[in-house]
Image 1 (cartoon, helix red, strand yellow):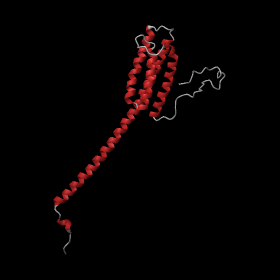
Image 2 (cartoon, one colour):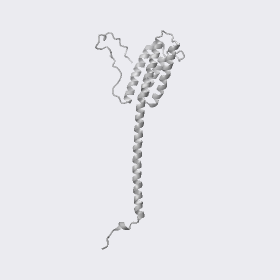
Image 3 (spheres, one colour):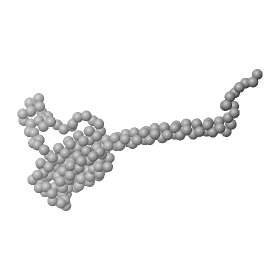
Image 4 (tube, one colour):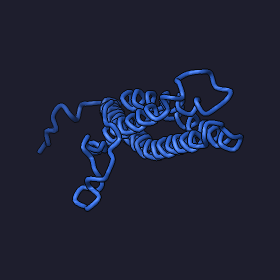
Length: 197
């Protein structure tokens, strides 16, 4: 009895090896491509997480140093007209610290934060500059309180832009009729700073 094997038996072992090699190459190429895509996606996700986490730290430094510059400028202004060397030194240090981190914010932030931070920075620059003898003349010192108020409004705008970029809901700005003493016996005595922008 003869066993019929068919055309497969007539195929050369080299053809079989070629098909096996081709299958291995195609399979390897597919596996390699998938591995590269997964690795690239993992790297991109890690970079985005790193940027987001570092933005939080940078924004913290930015807001803290900006507040220190505002406080130093106001303390210098309350000195009674003449800016002493100690006050000027405090303003200068706060100015340097603030503008160091401001450049970093411009590097890592999305455009709405950069725009809000720029307005905040330039208002602070004018406010602090009015308390330094070597600074170019800018705003009149009679506008100091109004500029300080506008600095605070710019801070709220910058915070809101940062919150949006970080995916946080809602605004941090107080309502126009904000009264921290509402519901207490001091509610009617609280003097609200003008809220117009």
